Amino acid sequence: MFNLLFLQKKLVSKLPADFYLRDDVVLIAKELLGKVLYTKFDGLLCGGIITETEAYAGIRDKASHAYNGRRSDRTEIMYCKGGTAYVYLCYGVHSLFNVVTNKKDIPDAVLIRGISPLKGVETMLDRAGKKAVDKNFGVGPGKVAKILGIHYSHTGTDLCGKQIWLEDTGIHALNHEIYTGTRIGVDYAAEDALLPYRFIFTKYQKKI
DNA sequence: CGGCCGATCCACT
DNA sequence: GTGGATCGGCCGA
Image (cartoon, rainbow, N blue to C red):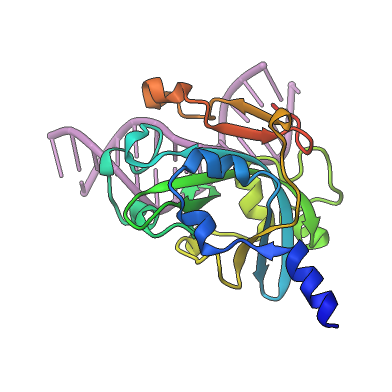
């Protein structure tokens, strides 16, 4: 019994607060590939392997909501300590889930753009209104939040808590398995739109 | 206070 | 490949 618990702890571990508090958001965005994002709402456990991310580098990044130190009721969450969920509404329809990183008052974040379903697939299919998993199930930031049951009202949720958390299950993306490109929909960010801050784990998701 | 627009998705052609 | 849906946040007046 003891050995079994020990083994589980070793192989599967919830990401600790320290993981999110580091100051290299681009590195964290890469490291998040392969981690498993879990939610548990109303007793329904769902999770998926993270397959695509984008880094948003705080006040120096014109694509970031917190560019130039901008603060508002919405973006205030980005200034929380790393390990907090920043979820906001996009196009009036979609909730987009971000992992806040870095220390308190430094508003870095990683947008989770794709997951590969792992746990609670039936629940996730229900939420998506689908009958079966297809190639693009879980691909797209709006869909990630939707199938995991994440809503923009969940912004500010602690990622070391019991509703939303991440685990390292021993899956790691090797450098040659990572496609690096520019971020989506950030043309307004001028030269920062060219930054190579988008990462895809090509073993699990085709680059689009 | 009004108007514009976005870190998107899906149905339809 | 494309255009419509849809509404909160943000900025300028």
